Length: 284
Image (tube, rainbow, N blue to C red; front, side, top):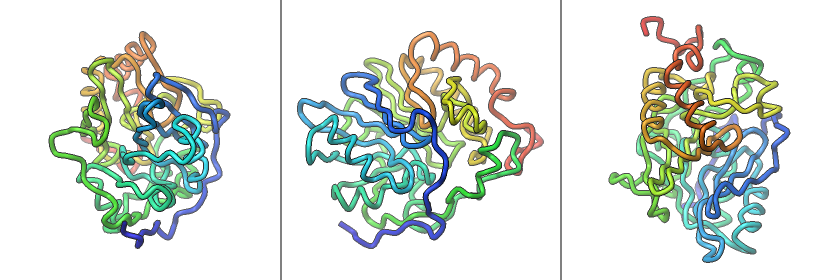
């Protein structure tokens, strides 16, 4: 294992949380969702065999909580076969270095996300001027510098298979970040959407704190390519998912999911795309 890992110099705990922080949900017998402050992690696997995969790595400083949740569902001293990252924003990789050191497991991400995970490239700065609520105004506090996982991070297989999750495939869903991926299981139409779309209006502080549920577009302050984001939502909606777990907000199922996602596709320009902001293409 490559021990020479480091976070960006701007990595620090972020003082934002919700009423659902610390809560776990058994979405399916082999899929668990846990909220850390304002973001979700997922654990996918069989509690009987103790084999599982962690999807995303929470907020800065959350490693102990993630280990505890893993052991709650999969037993003492359990460890995942791998960690899959939907993307590398700070709230999805906040505890990744501590977890890799503790578990000594590989990390997988899309090839286009690797520069942000190997210390090469910073993300574009979050946009506090974007149309939105108080969270957008707080976004200059959010880390955006790259982390460096060295050789511990590997690119996802080109054939769209997901390591150690044979029933899932990964789907490139850019827009929120260049290498953003979502995971989909055809047999029961389970979707792990990351931040391709979310189920809480992530720009509204009130809705973030209360976790008021609504299918919405990706968080505005970090999304830089709205054309790609729209196309990604359209692709995910075409899969007709029966259950979706997103990076922010509660899991959503059935009619509520199909209606919410359908409305988001039909009215994406009005619901998701802000009227102004430095990453808005006025020609769109």
